[in-house]
Amino acid sequence: MDADRRAQWLRGVLDLCVLGLLDSGESYGYELAQALGDAGLGQIRGGTLYPVLLRLQRAGLVTTRWHGGDTGPARKYYRLSAAGRAALTQASADWSAFTGSVRTTLRQEER
Amino acid sequence: MTDDAWLAALTGELRRHQVGPDLTAHVVAETAAHLRDSGEPAVRAFGTPREYAAAVADSVGGPDPSRAARPVGPVRLEVRGVTKRYRRRPVLTGVDLTVRAGQVAAVVGANGAGKSTFLRVCAGLTRPDRGTVRVYGRLGYCPQDGGTSEFLFPDEHFALVGAGRGLSRPDARREGRAYAAALDWTPPRSTQARHLSGGTRQKLNLVLARLGAPDVLLLDEPYQGFDRGTYLDFWHEVWRWRDAGTAIVVVTHLLNQLDRVDQVLDLTRAEAAA
Image (cartoon, rainbow over all chains, first blue to last red; front, side, top):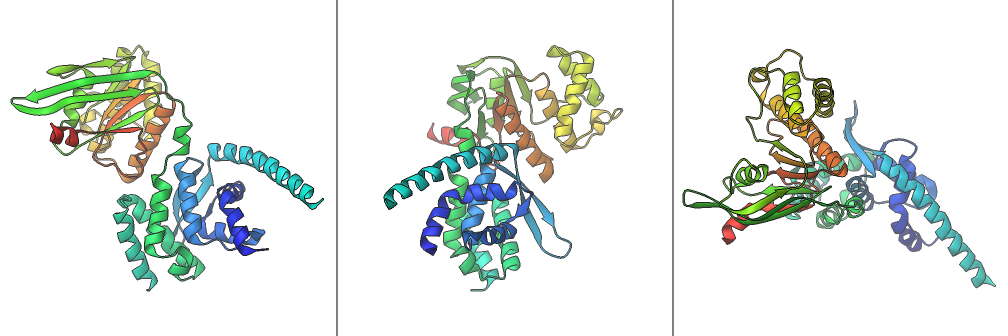
């Protein structure tokens, strides 16, 4: 896939993808970046990811806590709030409708 | 540039973008943890310190979507043209403030700018030389200090203040203890207020102001003596009360990134302009 286009698409949905990942439990920035990469969304730079996390925190969609590892550094953990879960449900439905429309339109273009 | 130098430069850039010291410390610690975990050079993961600081400032400085979506209610506090002098010195000059249900207003200003005087005027404890204050609904007031009675137990405070707000003794006690729990405090049964620490007494003060769920809540730097955890609990409570429709006025000199208030009344500027 064209990496530029993928990055461009991801920009619009990165916050939703993060909410989706957090739905299965709390996590921290680096782990989220890896999970996004594993999911096939490409390599997410820290400089892109953390501002998104800050925005989610500010909007009250995630809550945070600092937790010190026994061996490693203290990490900031993110957890989905009730508002975040509601936003995720809504956004998933919206996204399905949107991609459905895109898919239909692309098929028409093929004909 | 080494990572340490990069992080030091980031600290400076965040300060330049007027990101508060607490958030700066958090961002730098989180960035350092990421660099250690990933083993990537800082510039590749985060760009230049300036770019990353701008992105951080942008993501905390923009409008808060959760707030934009929140409906505000009717006007609860209306202050018009309040002027107050002590001897010849003007303390407040033509101050206006309107706070609606579900809004938080922060009152800021240098020492001596009249923040506490302004709150006392709002509470009806100090008479202004000119101007009007209208309160629509019931009022709760948390003074900077002196709101507690030396020889009473916390539960007796709850009963006393609760009685003034129409709460039965058991209800007042239950409500008081619930609010205290939100501030991570279990009021001791048989300790007089004079034997509580300063920070704990402030918690008691804050709980008393909140008893009976007043419509307007006036808080005069209510977090003095709080440790950091309690300070965050305090703001968390403020957001909860706001979301429940309380109109809140907070006097503070610590406006950092946490303080997502709806409006800021800067008394320093008002005084300087006068």
